[in-house]
Length: 164
Image (cartoon, helix red, strand yellow):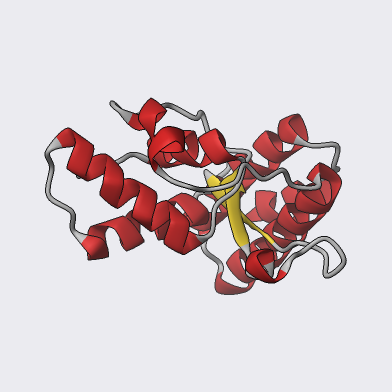
């Protein structure tokens, strides 16, 4: 089974947030329903790519908000996602015994902004124009997705981009 990042976001969106293991199990179940083979390495790669591209983002619950079961980071829909349900995904909430989770949107936005700032610094230090261009796009997505300001990130990335 191959799923796009937006399809991964669609699966996660059904539940609000999932652990990596839960998302992997959901994708395995989905592949079974679709009669497709599961390649665990491909699933892991798809999840990592979706995170790199800000389609999925990691959320660290506050210590006071996390139960023992929720103490690990969760994946939730990110600012670059256009969640799409893959075929048969609508059945997953009925098949899997996962609770629907909500995340603190302000806390999530702050965590994503912090990550974007750190990755922008890394792109600038590495003089990586391709990554800078991708992060510049994410900066606009992030501002549309949450109430955060990313002007400083854009200002740091812009000098790396080719000038017209």
